[in-house]
Image (tube, rainbow, N blue to C red):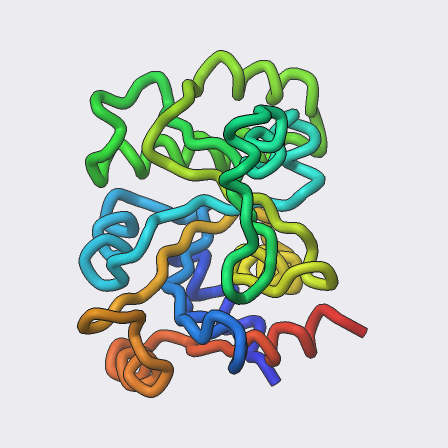
Amino acid sequence: MLRLEEIRKDLEAGIPVLIYDFDGREEEVDMVFYAGAVSWKSVKALRALAGGLICYATGKKEAELLGLPFQVDILRSSQELSRLVKRPKYNDEPAFSIWVNHVDTVTGISDQDRALTITELHKVVSHLSEDSENYKELFYEKFYSPGHVPILISRGIRNRRGHTELSVALAEALGLERSMLFAEMLGEKTSLRKEEAIKFAKHNGFHFLEGKDILQEVVA
């Protein structure tokens, strides 16, 4: 049983949680922040303590309101590039959409720049349900692509069970906007092993969550 109230309190305070997907899938652990509480220190933590690709994730509904496609669909629209679309070993289609920078960033890659892009993305996403037309227009005015922050779109936890879907499902279970930031945790040569991630979580006072625990909360 997840301690939802404690997890939400941590995420809203800018404290990450660690999420392990599933045995037999990627078998990876991601460090996950709530995008509504991200600062440049959050980006630095993902870069220095996790080490994997730093990604922003939101729900499919939000992506549709913004007109964001999946990257594989963009590639399929080109006869030549469509040849690059292949399933990874765990057989799920990727959640990647486009990569963006906010127009006020300098190069887009610094901790400060990425934090700005992520914070402004969160502002857009968190207001879409109340004023989708104006915030969609704001998105196209204030961001450019390609950039340094990849946007990932949840395909829904019943359709795909990657870290994108798990983090977005967790946000839903907590009553937070579907607006999350994460990076895979890396070890020596390979992804950080589950046992090592559990030790890391205990040492730092972070919640360690498994995909199966999140599923129990969101799937009837």
